[in-house]
Length: 72
Image (tube, rainbow, N blue to C red; front, side):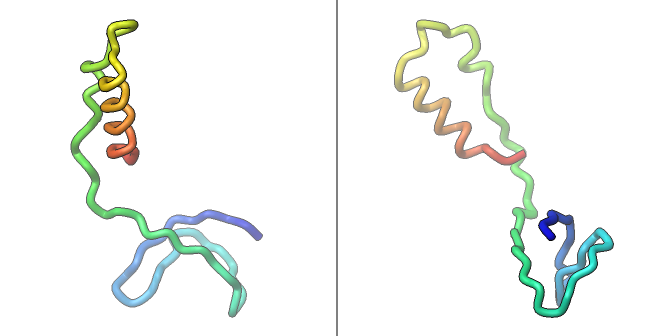
């Protein structure tokens, strides 16, 4: 079985939010998500309408900004 389910840590163990049947010793993959949501967004207006006027440094800044803020 391969499934992705939501859950949370209650301070003692991980609690699944869906009814999934697991066997004792069954392997799982756990992904820890950031609890703090970033409020800063990408200033896309800085790059709109630049066309051929977008210089290489502008493009590099744009890609860097996308990578830094790649989570919603």
